[in-house]
Image 1: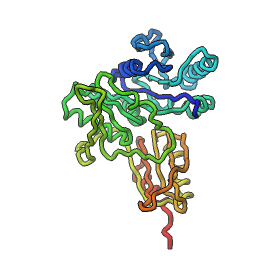
Image 2: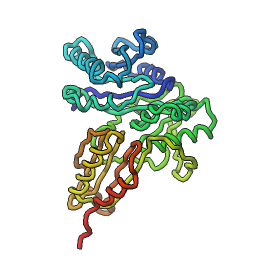
Image 3: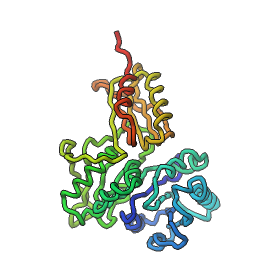
Image 4: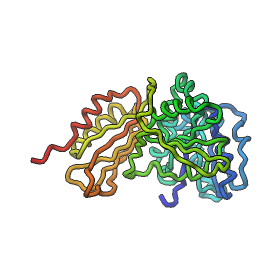
Length: 346
């Protein structure tokens, strides 16, 4: 893993500002070697010609259709070819950014880095970054299911074009995004001006005990007139006054200490039955008789488990599972999660 290339998947609906963000990165990248894998619909490059890279920037383009439809083919082959050239010294890069077309569902792209053995060893997925156009995101969510899928998979969301809407519309957009994904922090950026540290090397796919439930909105706003200084403010959950019937929503399940066999059977069952509709899920679980936190993290039916740090002696151990999914039987899932609780000690 120390030598593995960090990979960032950058997605967002059409016109959300992905190319602008990458150009800002390239202008503030200290000339570090970086590769950008782009997806185009047609044979003629558009976005690739707009990127302003230096000699250490390598742009590779896929022009035979949507990345998400060719994961087993052109996309995987392109990654293998890039690794071949890197090993031969022909292509130099210490970081890879996969910029998807605005109509791509990130799911198959993410899974590629877990199911392909060579990619699993040579690259490590750092995070899924989604750009959301504040001016148009609500209409996009109403009309295009993939827009909700993109937000659902996000580890971090960059809210763009906020300067084109008033505070009321911006607050509605934030509330709706949070209803779909309450794990991802939201960063408000203008004209792509975003420090690389806010969306690179955030280690979102590492098995750690940070459950990451925001329980509100964490929005970072650039202060004027110095855009590189950031201020944070928090909108409490009770301020959310609207609800939308989006297919994809975030759900939180809580319990005390769990029985290892029961929770293992529960997770195996729901992944098998509902994994196709579970976009992202992560749990920090308290297991009866074990002082360590049990970490679970998954995407659809690809799931990993590991033990993390020990629970603090002066704090009650609490199990929490966050599932971002669609068409899930939430009531029965919550009942099943609670049913995995350890039997009371007599």
